[in-house]
Image (cartoon, rainbow, N blue to C red; front, top):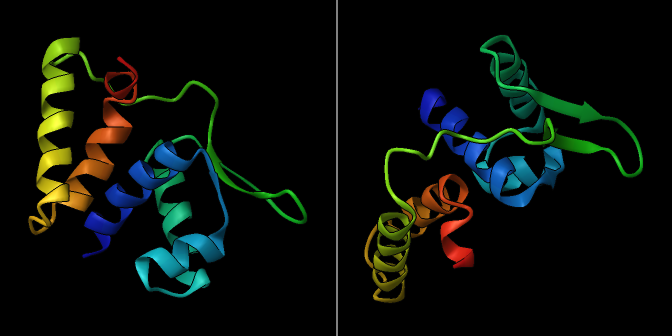
Length: 112
């Protein structure tokens, strides 16, 4: 469960750009302390997570951090993204989560 949450957390941060620990704890239904532990694990694993305290602070990834999306062409990425949107609209189980992940990975595919 923790590994899945860690992966989902990276995708969530990529999608949203800048988030708070409270936002992540609400989304993943865990304590903010758990989120801080997870951020520490991600940092140790080499994920470039940035965090800042106070007003305007929060959690983000280093500018320009992306996940390799070269496996599929831009057209293939667009097709996968559109297919998941259709599944999401049809309330297909887990389509929302898959769309969130793919959206982060194929960020440019949805802009076409």
